Image (cartoon, rainbow, N blue to C red; front, side):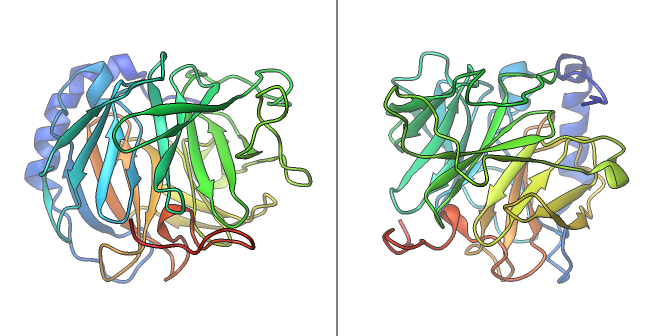
Length: 311
């Protein structure tokens, strides 16, 4: 990845950007176009601090938004903001994370289990994270055997994750790399990740819109995957076999670095993606390309899984 600026270099401009974002970057009600800004919330901790304002994670459980600091040890929760708003988050609740020595980098909500799948701060530990902050190790990713063809980017431990209820699997996307891996939620006999037979990984190709190939976030809640790319004003739709379906413009000039993505088809009159900005502490809701494209919590259950329900 060609980082436009490093995370640490961005600290000098974060405070100014946050003030301008709140003053001038007012969200507008959706105009029925993919990529339109629907709501904008600034996390209460956001300030020019490396571990907080620049953290990449976001998740939605059907009622609240959740996020952590960079490889953080506190699970934060805030209210979903009203449509058309640009505001600091309300209803702030913290839960200390217990059981993850390297902290938690990113999370994805599993509506069937009512918990989060979480990637540890080492980029290799995969946890089930309860809403009270209890982390239980599910398996570890072997950096050689479980990531064939892995080419480390500038942030090798910053891994994004999406939970797929269609087949009870995880999509694992190391930041600033082109390859997205596909794991079963159950480990092998040695406690390591198990690649999904037939679709173990795919590579993105976003050069036409971005000028480079990488992923910075991944979400799923239906037939296709959705990919964000830091420094690129588009998000992308892919089939689960790795074919690009479409590219959609993000219609908001204030977004600096699109990171983690989570689906929400409940909060507003249109379905949205929650996208965490990697620099300024904002979580923004952008309209999905169509109704039902990405349902919250991993989407509808596949054969043999409990039905999707509200928490």
